[in-house]
Image (cartoon, rainbow, N blue to C red; front, side, top):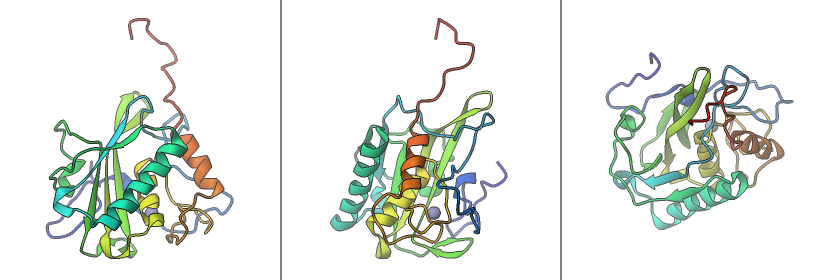
Length: 214
Ligand SMILES: [Zn+2]
């Protein structure tokens, strides 16, 4: 895809979902999806499969940072009903993670960057991108995600925010949500966060004309 560009020497947007939509956001919108299917449903993960996540062995966190990420993943598993499980660290090049079609030992790669992450609005505490495939015409499902966290400013709120991007949520305009575009110091879900998590964890609807052989 044309927006999957990469320039040497810097972390660049690698997928549609890394693009940061600038404010303002409609304050009445409690939550937003990163991407929508043609039928108006949010693009999301297939809830019938576990989501395995792994730390990037090349950008491994300190114990306290690792604990924050684990806490965030546990909160998200409990809230969504997704099976979200940690697997052994993997050695990976983050810029290649979403691009490669290699069979992977995890769906989500978590890297603790020691450099300043750059995005369209300057320095970021973290970035996240998710890659979707077309399950059937008009319906996409996420298959891989890449989360990068700036080690020096990692909080539970930041870990939650980026992991929620990886689950398919976008930014909102309300400061009472974890998905507030400007980042948040809070570490508890807002009402919109909960509604969004509920929406992206719903099962993928079966095709309208289902075959008995499937
Ligand atoms: Zn964000």
